[in-house]
Length: 259
Ligand code: PXP
Image (tube, rainbow, N blue to C red; front, side):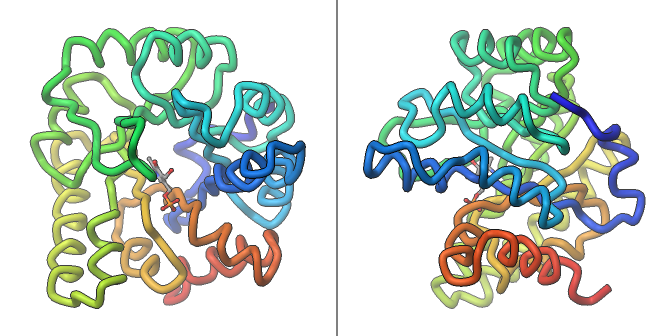
């Protein structure tokens, strides 16, 4: 894998970076059991259109991304791969072979449609501390996908994580159901979580993602201190109508609109 730059130098402009999650290109392929559309081709097109990184989630049930996708994409990316995975022994072995730039540890339940909640870091500090050390030992930076909650942020810091990814699902869901007050409260929760993380460990990178769309992304992108946003479903949905490159361009401009 080619690594273009260190994560800290990549967004000196302070505008959040865009990591594109391409899992649903693989979902479409798996629905037919054929060889197209190709997640690798999608990853390279996203990079060409300005994506700052590519996220893929290798799930235990292999419902979309397959092991061969992980190896092929890692081989050809020129930005950074963010490999989402559960903190299992099987995934640790794969990550140590692939050596993605980032691993993002997520909770995983077989029956869920998508990642439903953040990782319970405070409930498994010993396991995660050891797990994170093993990934870092081969040069991988580790992020933990957590709810915007100070207990979980403090636990992520205790475990030695390089970054956190704040779950924006509740904020997004409130917007979809038209619940303006709850959405405002969830936005505040995310803003407070960013402030807590900065106070507790100024060097911690703070990412966010889940359920973000061109309509709701701007308020999150404007939070000072957010390093990268990981966006998948809505961007791939846009791509059906406008093409993948244009969907990346449109998402980036929605993120940076007020600048
Ligand atoms: N971040 C994490 C940790 C995720 O699990 C997902 C969904 O795979 C995303 C971001 C992207 O969410 P969405 O597909 O809703 O944009």
